[in-house]
Image (cartoon, rainbow, N blue to C red; front, side, top):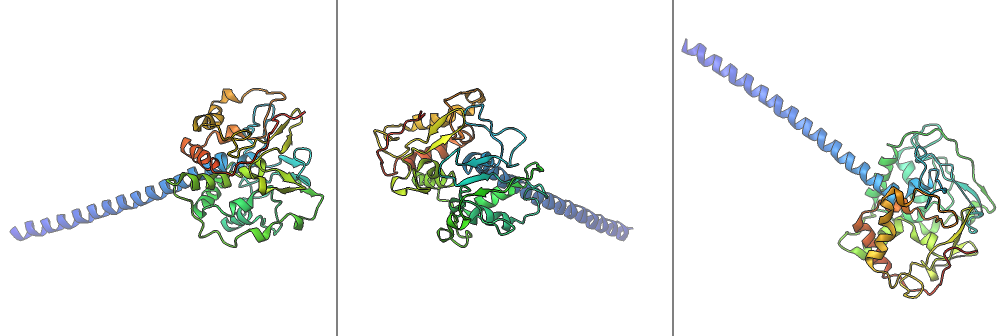
Length: 324
C-alpha cells in the first residue's frame, strides 16, 4: 500500500510539474507576444507622429481645405495624393506636380512596395519603377533622418486606409535631370541616428531638417535656394484668394525671430491644437504653412526647434506677410 501511495504521489508531482511548466510556457509566450505587439504599437505611433506633425508627409499627400485657416487635411483623403503643386502656387516650381498616393492600395498606391522600395523613395527620390522624384519631395532632408524614424514612418503608412486614386503624371518644363540632386545624397542611411534630446540645439536642427523648414523659408533665386540667406523668408505662395510670403525666421532682431521669447514661438503653434482656431474661412488672411498639423508637435520638440532657430545666422530681410 505504501508503495502505491508513493507511486501515486510521484505521478501527481509529475503531472503538476508538467501542468505548471505548460502554464509557464504559455505565460512566457503570451508575454513575448504582448511585448512584440507593444513594440510594434510604439513604432507605428512614432511614425504617426512624424508623418502627421513633423515630416508632415500626410499634408502633402492628401487633399487640403484652404477654405479653412492653414489648409487642414480633408478627412478621408489621408495619403491618397492628388494635391496640385505648380508655378501658380510658387514660381520656383517648373511645371505641375501632384502629391503621390502613399496609401497601401495595391493598384494605385504603395501596397505592393517592399519596405526597401518605400525607403528608397523617401530617402533617395527613386520610385519602385525607377522614376526619379522632383525635389519638392524633400528626400534630400529625409536622407539625413535616423533609420528607426524612417522605418517608423513606413510602418505607419502601412496602417493607412487604402485609397484607390490614380494620380496624374507630372508635367515638367525642364528635364528631371536638371532637378535631381543625386550628388547631395548619401548612399545608405543605416548609420543615421537621432541626436540626443538633451542637446536641444542639435535635436532642434534635426527636427527642422525633417520638417523641411528651410525650403519654404529660404529665398529662391532662379529656381534655386539661396542658402546664403537661409531661413530669411520672402517666398510668395499664391493660394488663389490670397498671396502670402513665408516669414523671416532667422535670429535677426529687427526682421526675424530675434526678439521672440520661447513662449511667443510656442503660442504660434499650440493655439491651433484647438480646432476652433483654424476651422473658419480666413479670406485673404490665409497661410500655406500647415499650422494645424505642426500644432501636434510636443512642447519639448517645439522648444527644441526654437532653441535651434536662435542659433541660425541673422539675416536682415523685411517680409510683407500679405503682398498686394
